[in-house]
Amino acid sequence: MDEAGPSNSTSSNGSSAQVDDSPQLEVNTPLTAACLSLDTQGQQDQRDLAHRDSSTWSLSEQSHFSTGLSVDDDADSALGDVEDQQQSTQSVRSSIYEYIEEHGRTFHRYKQGKYWLPNDELEQERLDLQHTVFTMRLGGELGLAPIVHPPDDTTESPPPQSVLDLGTGTGIWAIDFAVKYPSAQVIGTDLSPIQPEYVPPNCRFEIDDAEDEWLYSDPFDYIHLRMMFHCFRDHLGVMRSALAQLRPGGYMEWQDWLPILNSSDDSIKGTALEKWSRLYVEAGGVLGRNMLAPKRYKQWMLDAGFVDVVETRLAVPGNPWPKGKDNKRMGFLQMTNFLDGLHASTMTLFTKGLGWEPEEVEVFLVDMRKAIRNPGIHFYWTTVVVWGRKPLT
Image 1 (cartoon, helix red, strand yellow):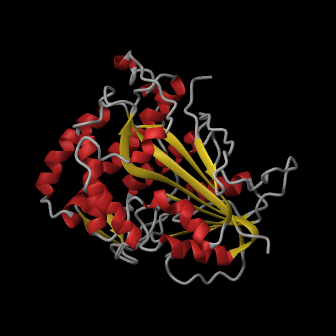
Image 2 (tube, one colour; image 1 turned 135 degrees about the vertical axis):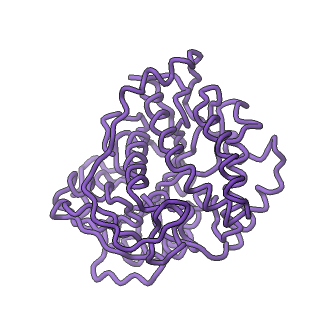
């Protein structure tokens, strides 16, 4: 087994939580809504970031974060070892019957402008690839919340019978969950109707905005969200809505990446990647989004009323720079994921948030693509997974 990065986990009382973070490479293969003004803490996050100089602006929290990734000195072989493992992702899609076009890509029309990324076929393939990266990083699991094995309990509990996947995207997480747990009824919601027509009988999809009033008639056992850090104006409000809709003892789980790129050494400093991270967070703040929201998930869940709240942080390599076949493959897939989504996300944020001209963005992205592919830059994404339980009484 190749080396895999250890996780950093803390429960709501600060104690250590054990999580198996070894990436299992049997592959399986999100997104949603948002905008408006930042809350007070979100504004403070933006100010903290703005006052960092170019040599120290990375989050101080990362100083104690153990990635478990070791640099492969034989960098030239990084891509050759994994290129032949790249798999195409295909699935039957329903028609995109409501959309708008911008910068040559299509976007959702319902709640137009609330979600920044496209909904076209290229984006759907990228979302399925992103799902693969997440499940690899979570050791082949769809989530880390103890929905079948409760804490301090060696007996196996029945799986959740009613599950909600907010921001389901292509629906691949919901479909995989429905296949894994055929007794569960799974609902996936999104702003775009891009989910497959043919799905398991225990899975269905709806067009909905999680920041609107929740009108579900029955409670859920498990509510899942992924890649939603840039999607909501009120994350805490969504958590409170979820708490009210959960059965006592039910779980809510958030899975996200911090859009702050770090490196295992100083190799990221002065690169386009470092500049992109800073500008990405800055642009999101101008557009009313707290791009550093995952840092607050744990506290917000406690504020909402959840108990047994646990946060785990895991590293995902940005390209195939680390040692180990499994880590290289994960890095290659994440590099592809980043490259495939780079133009759409950067063009939207930098033109609308920072006032850049499209031509300026295109020039900047030339340097970005070179940096992303450079195995000499040992950068990684921090995956933040937070889950909590609704009290029994």
